[in-house]
Amino acid sequence: MTTITVNLDDAKARALKDKASEYGLPLNKLVEASIDDLINQTEPNFKRAMKRVISENHELYRRLA
Image (cartoon, rainbow, N blue to C red; front, side):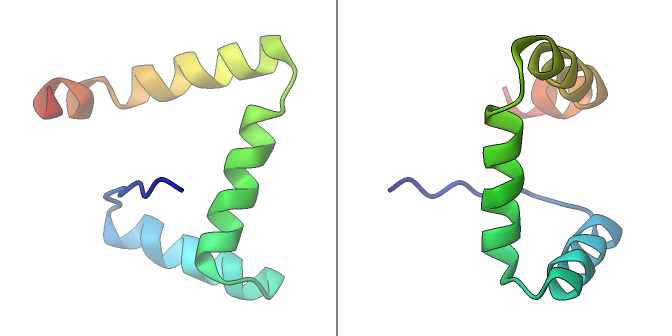
């Protein structure tokens, strides 16, 4: 199994924890289920989502490179 670390701002982390609590799931299970959903989307939806994420996080990726 691979461990991936993701940095979130406090508001996003809080919202994610709240959503996990709302669904009665541990935080890691909610994130894993969300990733599964993303991976299993039909190809056009995945490409659109991938482009949006890359575009929204372009500056972050540049700084991490």
